[in-house]
Length: 213
Image (cartoon, rainbow, N blue to C red; front, side, top):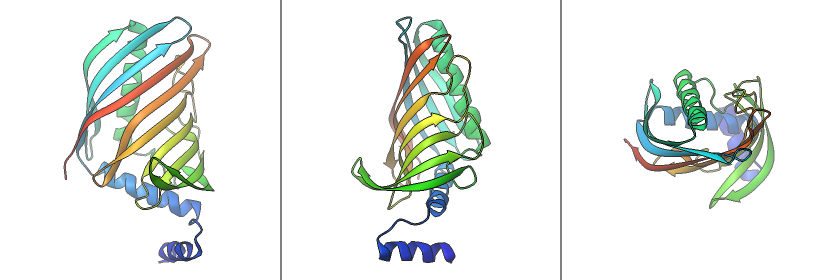
């Protein structure tokens, strides 16, 4: 009842609700996404600027409630080491999806409302995110939250801990799209820099989503 009162008051006053209330609604939206079966295709393109090398990996991803994401590699090409890095990233995401403990919400993040912004045709709340623990599954940065659905429209930040000696803690910009009643990633760009590989750039394109009602 208190949360509803905050939302009604914010709507009347024209000001955003408290950051933790927004994060709680985002968490509820994520829970609903985890309860849906969906599938799609992804193409990972990793470029290393120091050695002028590239790798491309195409995968099919299937998400089932209670099971998380399962990835099937369809095609690989390019430098073997970079292909291996992409495969480690895929394995890390599969592991995180099975655990289901790293969603954006008040249990994992402190938030601060920066204001409002229109992005990708959506009116959004903009929040600063501060992770409550140093975890490679969490982000330190900003999030854009759709005012009407509380889905994440964009995420911009760095991982709270290093992913590996090859990847470090990359800077990630991830855009999302609404598919029916859930929000799914549409495009990801990340840049990382390590002593071993120098600067690398990763792009992920998402296509052919199928969502079961």
